[in-house]
Image (cartoon, rainbow, N blue to C red; front, side, top):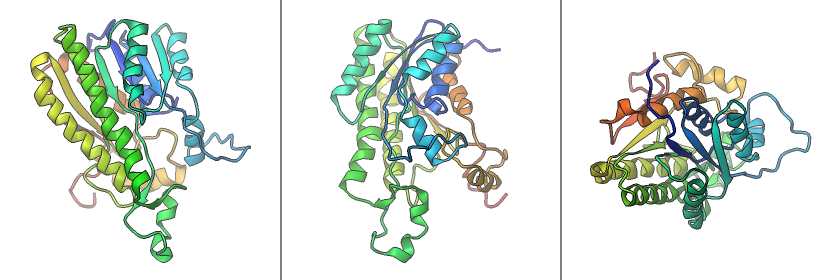
Length: 296
């Protein structure tokens, strides 16, 4: 087993409150390698049936997980001997960026690794909402599908783009101030960030994240900070129903849906000493999904 030399490093992971999600898996993987982890979460409220204790993956199951505090994930790490703390806050509020760092530094003294995993998702489209026939299939994407408007645009960019930029800037200022000359930033994108019908604002905001990442890599390299992007394909974080999973598998050369641990492994690699001369890179972790090779 390769030692990534992360023992006693401090990792801040955003969007880690879903126990079945990518952020939680990243936090657990860092803790496995001896890192101290500070987990940010945001409890999202959804209108669900009162008897919606569904155990099978799907949108309702996923929404149930998103309603949880990051405390559950932190507690699961502490239970097996790891070091973990948490804080829940809405990153759409710019003040929470500074507050998040203050909470993490109070818990562990410093931050060495920043993983921007938190994301806002509302399905939106350019198709007018009153075009009922064309919109028929769009509503299947989720209960919040709508024509793009100021709210759907701003909600996405506030979390997926602006918060990421502000978190990177705050992280860099602290690394530079204490002259650490070592830091890792790993940002989580999506494997069709360059554009996707029915998810236009989500994908556009992720594309902005990728641009910010490349600029940060160029500017922060001289301070010993690497910046890389992991771009997942379909990952079972609780939202993919069994029938959807079966429909997706034929488009994935490795013939399986991704697991959160697949993404966590890539993130830990980018944070490792072995990746010390890698920066400004975009790594697709998607089992070959969306390769431009036609039908396989």
